[in-house]
Each structure stands twice: as structure tokens, then as C-alpha cells.
Length: 85
Picture (cartoon, rainbow, N blue to C red):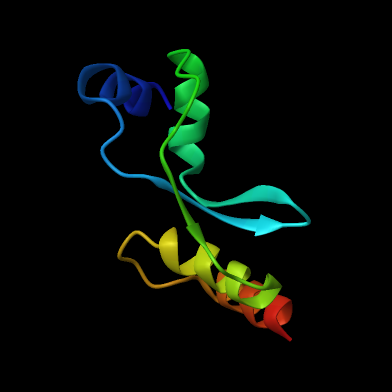
């Protein structure tokens, strides 16, 4: 969080967070660290990309957007399969 906050202070927001609409509210799918760090630097707004996603697509998007180039653990894979079923 501290590193992200430093980056936001120095460079601003370089990529939007990703949200979907659920029951009339924005639900964060990607950008958890940016959102948390924004509160540390008192950034009041963040740019966001809104995607159209039902519950299953939103869960898959959270998984896909938050991968860091590594293979998922068996537990993560099982969680996703369970959530989608």
C-alpha cells in the first residue's frame, strides 16, 4: 500500500480501476491496492472502467484481472470453480 501510495503521489493514477454495477452500486473487480492507497494520499476520486458483468463473469474477472503472471494455487482454482458452479 505504501509503495502504491508513493506511486500515486509521484505519477498519479496510470490505469483505471475496474468496476461493475451490482444492485445500483459500483463493485470493485480490480484496483484494490489503488483504492486503498488513494485513501492514504487523500485522493478523492479514481478513474474507473465499468464492465458489464453478471455475478459469474464478475468473479471470473476478479480472478483474471488480479493474476500476477503466476499459476493459481489449487485452493484458488477450487474457489473459482466452486463460485462459478
